[in-house]
Image (cartoon, rainbow, N blue to C red):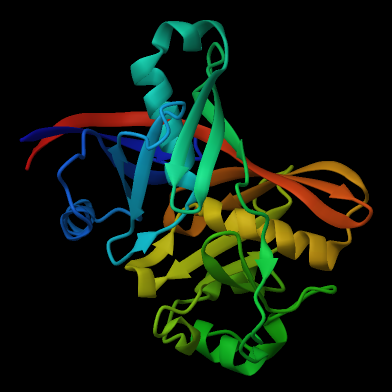
Length: 300
């Protein structure tokens, strides 16, 4: 059976940058093992499989796989799939107005707003289906983290920021790094905390490469089959919890631009929106652009 697929670059307005994504359409009849095998074949950080929705009012049900495991939620697959489905199903409406796409993910229904502006790439944003939560176990020590990343212990941490564990659907160890120079030297190494399905590692620093960015980040997830990811929306989603915990943002709405993938030659820009009320995180959103790069068919 021929199953259509498309590849996109996400969190970028230009092809051959950002985070590549494969989206396979018409996936009825594929079980999880077959989907995992196809994801390994594409060998991208994530592959999305599109199925009919369980709720007729939604756009599609999706399953998301890295080359090594299934994820209940991920940001760049959500952005890329929403942009693709809006373009394929409602191109005329998209040219005139925003299009709403609702994706059923394992974490819950995710409502996306897709837009096309003249002279710009497709873009989408969505409110988090689940606010980040701080995990109840202690993070590894600074010495252990430094050894696993090839850094010195004194390069871990800045201001009030210390290593922490948060999840908004997928778990991450958040590692504050003192400088751009240090984060550039970091290597995935042997990270003991990733064993047995442990969290991926998200490094971040306030020093940035581009004016207007709030944070510079890298993400290592060797345990998921992704040695390094150019842009990680699920980590940015959980990072809303980090910002709320360590930066003490003022009440109101804030938009932070996170740059990632620069060390890989895949510059990516993620927009993280946070809403603070009475000093607590009440809402968060992820936004970014996507470019359709290729189309084809799988004979499976």
